[in-house]
Image (spheres, rainbow, N blue to C red):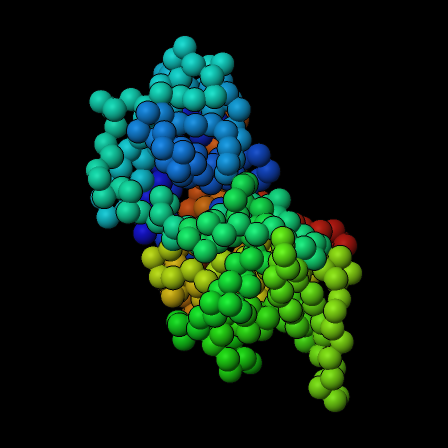
Length: 374
């Protein structure tokens, strides 16, 4: 598990150091550096997967696009070196020299200033025990592509940019064809006796839309997903509903649920805006699933603007579904020089905020005060 991450001279980060936990939450003001934290990890992974990390940092494709050297280097950098460092089982550090590379999309690796032990490549960041889901996930589609190698060998939900476009193939292969049981007891949905992966996925999807069901079928060149709804009075079923006709929330949350349920202990899952298109109740239940997955040994890093996700995690701490010491919350804002600054938010045993920061999900209270003329 990554326990510390440091960014130097990268975009809005001059010298940012973050403690990481089983569950790490990045939140704060827009354009304050949250996404850049995730991009640092994605850049390392995409450069490694292209076989180039030992030579340098590839700034574009297939996980994220930064642009050129001048886009990556901080505007307030004191030198030309971008550095990423992390602690896990050992300490690791990568340095990349942007000098004379401002117009390039590849930044050379500076080996003599770096420290990358061979154990590095066993970290989930560089293995198949990794999932990334961006805020630009596929949604409201009935038909999804097939990618045999990415799904059946690398166990990935996405091929490019964390879109979750392989979720249907993943669900078919592991939920139907190569069905496996969900192992960690604590993550089992309480209302679903079956441990089958597809059944558990449907059970957690029903927290987004009550009584929903789902059918996954493989066609000649794609995999389709159809939804349905049970009628409680006679247990009959309305089925055959296209994804385009059931709202964005179900299909937008689907890859998030699949990633959390399918990841084994020791995996790393990175999710941007898990709350997108969800009703507040659905957001709160999704936060519970995120906490349960982290408590089962999956390291989860999320970026969120949702007070319902935030409060759902606090509720999970209060309910002892995850220990407060395993949750690291970082609030980001820009200082007067437009450099990213972060504050680590502390929680009590009952989920209360111990060091409140103005701007930390307080807009509801401020608006209510105005409405009540307080």
